[in-house]
Length: 114
Image 1 (cartoon, rainbow, N blue to C red):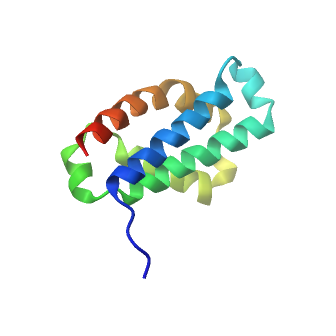
Image 2: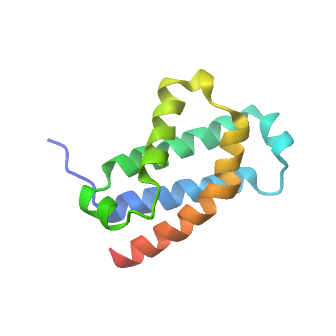
């Protein structure tokens, strides 16, 4: 039987994935991002890791921290894996540059609590 990873470790995985995305999008434009398949797919993969880690965070943490958009994060993970042909690169860019910075702050605060 596999050991359950702790909430603290899952949050650290999320922060690590966000740090990777920050590297991928640093100093480039949306157009450059969309035209670079390595950056696009690496970013999507890290967002999928974030979504998967969020699925494993315990329900009590998710309920207590309902300001974090758990459902949307997990929903995008499902979309990118199961409906990959419907993923808009403009949305991926928007997540990377507009949503992940706020999530990073929320996860840093959560990590301090754990």
